[in-house]
Length: 94
Image 1 (cartoon, rainbow, N blue to C red):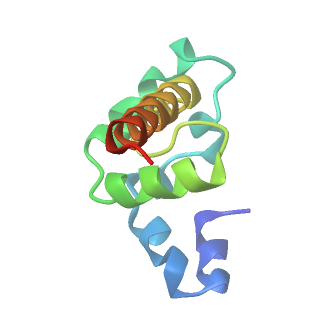
Image 2: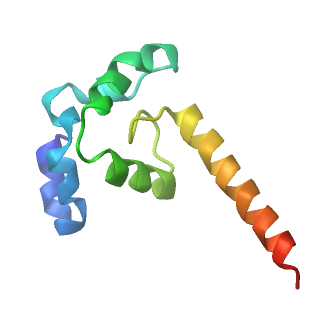
């Protein structure tokens, strides 16, 4: 599947066509480990749709580099967000 194929899914995915990643081979964004993700993360650093990309990945638990974060970084972020929400809920009480 190429980035052009996302146009088939409607306007909700239109941001994908604007990503800097469209100029690179897709497999570059699906590395085997965080160490080899450095090149993809560098590309993401200059991308104008990083926020939308990250939001998509957080909801869909995508493998690879999305939104300028590796899989591990997103997993850590999700844990931090979940912990913060639990603390807020506890502070508010029943």
